[in-house]
Image (cartoon, rainbow, N blue to C red; front, side, top):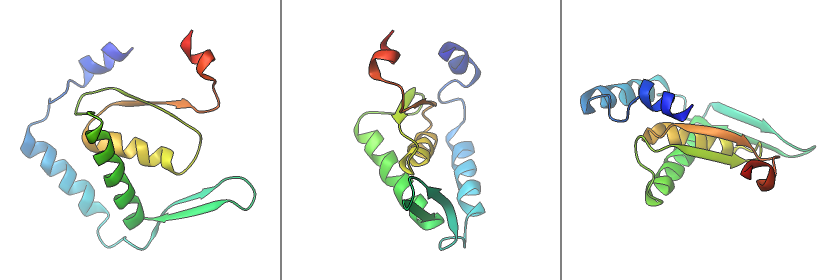
Length: 116
């Protein structure tokens, strides 16, 4: 299946000006929303977290930079193995930000069940 993804969306298929325009358009869509709620997470009873658009942008940038430091680059495939916590959509958005296709593996699966 991953080969189909690579064939459908080859790395570097967009020119730099096209990519820059797409990023500018996406960022512009959220201008002025800094303090508005972007994501409200409710976990176990009494465990909640609210992220504003500003918080989300900051966390996604930090995560994208961490992925880059680990050597992840545009076109690399990333598997995200995490529980359903606020950092999950942050990791997904960070992958999208650097152009790395990703898949999410539910964190409830054991490593043994995934190895076979």
